[in-house]
Amino acid sequence: MPLTHPNSILPLPVWLTAGDEPLIIAGPCSVESREQLMATARGIKAIGRVKVFRAGIWKPRSRPGQFEGKGAEALPWLKQVKHETGMLMAVEVARPDHALQCLEHGVDIIWLGARTTVNPFMVQEIANAIKGSGIPVMIKNPVSPDLHLWIGALERISLAGSNKLIAIHRGFKTHEQTLYRNIPLWDIPLALKKEIPSLPVICDPSHIAGKRQWVGEVAAKAMWLGMDGLMIEVHPDPDNALTDPLQQLTPAGFAGILDNLPANNQIRSEELLREVRMRIDENDDKLLELLSKRMGLSAEIGLLKKQFGEQVVQPSRQKQIFEDRLKKGTGLGLDHEFVKTFLELLHEASVVIQKKNFEHE
Image 1 (spheres, rainbow, N blue to C red):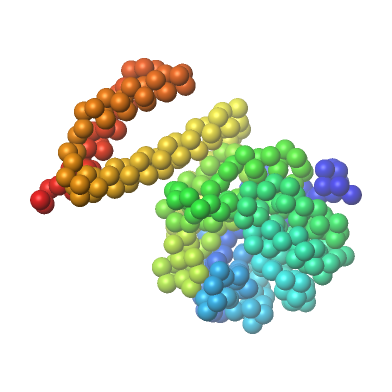
Image 2 (image 1 turned 180 degrees about the vertical axis):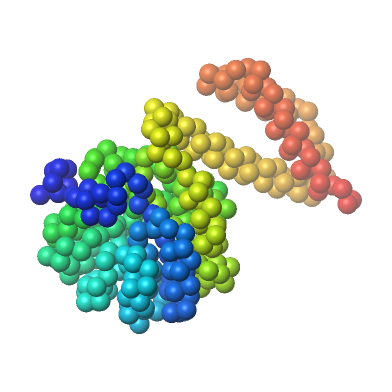
């Protein structure tokens, strides 16, 4: 049955959530010990609102020798968490044997990470392993911004007999330096929701942000854009976490983010504006990143001018730049005075940076 068929995916309220409340999933990036796991679970349970507890027990790492999780040793610990807190257990699987061990130990939900989604052969092997089990599966977007690859992974799991599917938007890898660890490219998850309207799509702001100070901002934006929930990483001592310490939150920090999420009635009232605001925000982020690079080049050319004995301010070069940029800016439809003022401010800031290289002569 194709994913676009109305009966191919069960709505979240039927099997996981109540009404139109967003699905909140939380837990540590990786399970480090029984004590750390239980401390995290108890802290999250005390907050409330969390239906599913996420725990990484198999961690795919970029380089050998890094902590790769506790593996199957942690599966009985998850049973203890579920018994004590009542939260459902979710585990990332990267191979068929991981999935089979989760089935054997009664794990409630499994998810495929971005590094797995990108490999159709491995997705198919996992689909074959869980075929007929009906276990709910969450699938993160592939590392690359490839909507068809993401849909393909969902289709493979659906064809294995699972009608309890959730897509997780965790951002996309880029070689450029940006504000976030992974660029959101919100148009892609929104296109997925449009392509498969019955599919729940939640956001992983921890992996998009990469730093805990931006997690709340990304989480709020995801809610404004109509995502169906959030998956957030929580750790009792984030600074000393064995994996992704910068992006994990304390239970108190996590509670603060939940308290500041927009309410459903706010989201509905903003529905007509949210796509335009999203584009404005993304363009502002790009502008700031470009300005940061531009100032870096100013510092670099300042060093070269000092090395070659040239003056910081070169009127002929300044005149040439202003004329060229004014022509280009007005040609793009920008107001002449706005472009002129912007160029003057940019020039002043650049001069300040360059002069710093001459201060100690």
